[in-house]
Length: 262
Length: 254
Image (cartoon, rainbow over all chains, first blue to last red; front, side, top):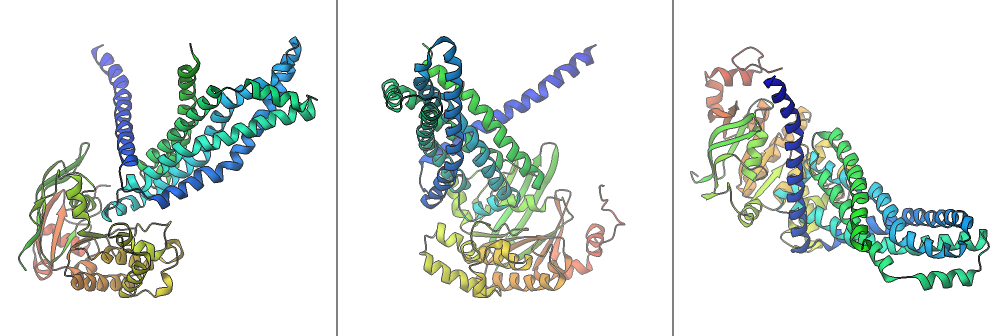
């Protein structure tokens, strides 16, 4: 009987200890990353490259995602609201859902797939081919050279992307309402502008910034800690995308709660 | 010549329950070339990584130029790295940079040398390891394995280090290319007057580049001496290893 209990506790304890160790490891990684983000030297050229990679080259993906999100929310809310004659609220529903939720969350998830995976693969390959060790032996801090530029770029660029996504998403709603559902263009724009509140847009941009941090952190962390050749890098890539996506959804809720719950 | 450059005493390192280094004592004199031989998985790479500060030993001491490095702060570690160069087993060239940017990495990032001057210097070092200047603008993936080794060697010596580590420099090369690399190692280490620590299991290479050879087995240095002494030793472990025999006191764990 006693051995059963012991085995049971052992089975319970091992993953728990593992989880706590991993959590501690991640916390240390975050602390070290942030410290190296704010202390010199800064690699401006590498930062510039990350701005291009994360920001500029993600524009098509974010644009397509948000325009269709705006279009579908216009169509859905119109057909839904028509049941009780509230078609006139479509403009503000599009505005609020795009700026608060759809643009930040969908862009975040798309960029997590695009950038998180690429980062984990690149840094993971550098780890398993000893390129990270080589950096250290050449007196270069890998946190400054590899991690800091990515995280800084993620935090700054994601809000810019999402701001553009906001505009494109609202435009998508406008296109559907005006050209398909026969709304008056002037009324639609007026109604959008009248209902626009700073908090809707700002909360979306703050979310985007947090998501940018999550995506780049998970990409760097999983890549940095990867081991064991090609298989290890593959695993790191998967983990980076999955963990970033889940964390985005979790923090989306937490931030919404902080911003809007009374 | 008898000035001690690196002094390792009672060094221990374990990963979980697996003890890798179990009390290493080793000394390297200035300008000397020491080769550490030993089977795969005996902790040769771990030893080098401990000396470089890439891994933290569990206990023991490593003194470089009389200065303790175990537990040293970041600044001391950084200062140490600028004294060291390393040729990695797989080359470990940065594949996002061109060949010359790889070679000049230390000059560009740490010594803040202007790019034009750094490139001239990189091309000079590349020529030293037998590579033509037109290789400079290629990427590492565009050149052969032997050339990558040479570029990696060029990167290791470009900052004129006082200590150079060679991690299995001839592994994966054909015998002739291996010998070319051996010659380059001797030349470049002597040319710089650098202290060299090589780990390998290639006996031909060890005989050629070593002033002194040490054998690592089960986490301990079980034998050390000159190449001449190596041929005459009656240590059964060393004899088995240099003859490459499956029979003897060393049992291969399958």
